[in-house]
Image 1 (tube, rainbow, N blue to C red):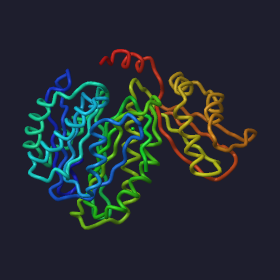
Image 2: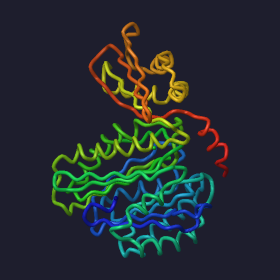
Image 3: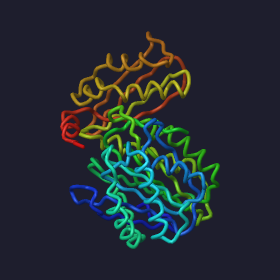
Image 4: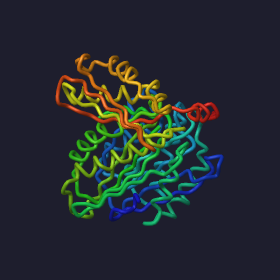
Length: 362
C-alpha cells in the first residue's frame, strides 16, 4: 500500500462526485515534510490542479496530496484555478500543515466545474480518516473507468517504496523530464535535486512509454514524496524505476476494453532515443492493436508504424515477431542498425473500447 513506507498515512472516501457512489476523494499524508518531485502533462490545455501543483512543487517540501476522481477540473477557467486552490487550503487546514506543502490533482470529466462544497466537506471527512490502513482506499478513490486498483510496493536497501496509479483511457502521456496519475511514497532519504533527476529518467522509461489510445490528457502527473525516515537510499534509482515500470504496465494492461497487454521490444537501434521512438510508434498503432486482438501475426503493420518515425533502420534487415499469450502479446522489432533497445507497452483495441467511450457522456 502507499502507506507501507514509514510515516505515511492515507484515506479514501466518497464525497458525491461519482454517480456510482463509489469512493472519489483521496488524501495521502506524510507525518514529516518530504522531498518532492513531479512530472506533468505537456498538454497546452493543462487542468487547473496541474497549474496549481506546478507552483506548489517549487516549494520543495510536501506533506500531502489531495486528489479527486469524477471531475477533472479542466477547461474551467479562473473558477477552476480558484477551486483547486480551495482544495489545497482546505486540506492544509484539515491536516494542520502549511498551505505550501499540499499538491492537488483531479481526474474525470473535462469541462465541468467542481462541486466545491461537496469536496470541501469530503476533505474534512477524509483528513479525519487517514490511517496506516487507508492506502488501498486511497488507491480506489482515484479510479475512473479503471477496472482494478493499481498498487506496487518494494522493500529493498533498508527502505520501502510504494506507488498507486490510475489510468485506463486517454493514455498517451508525454510528461516533461499518462488520463494517468501516479503517486509514489518512500521513506528513503533522497535530496530534492537527485529525486527530480531520477523521476525524470524513470518516467521516460515507464509512463512516457505507454499508450492505450494515443490521446494525451490534460491532467497527467506523477508525484513522488521521500520523507527520509528510513535514513537509507541504496539502489533507489533502480527501485524507483521498477515501481514506475510496474505501475505503467498495470495502466496499459487495464486499458479500456483491453484483453491483452501488448509489450513492444525494439532492438538494433542506432540510439536509445530512436529505439524509444520506434517502440512508441508500434505501441500507438491502432492497426497493430486490432491485429493483437485478432491474434493475427501482421508484420506489415509494424513496418508501417516504424516507417513513419525518424528512427534510422536498414529496411532490408528489419526483423519482426509477434508472440501471443493468454494475457500478453510480445511484439519484437530489430531495426538492424545498432545495439540500442527500448520497451513500450500498450494493449489491444476492441469493440468494448468504442462502447465505453461512446457512452462516456459529459
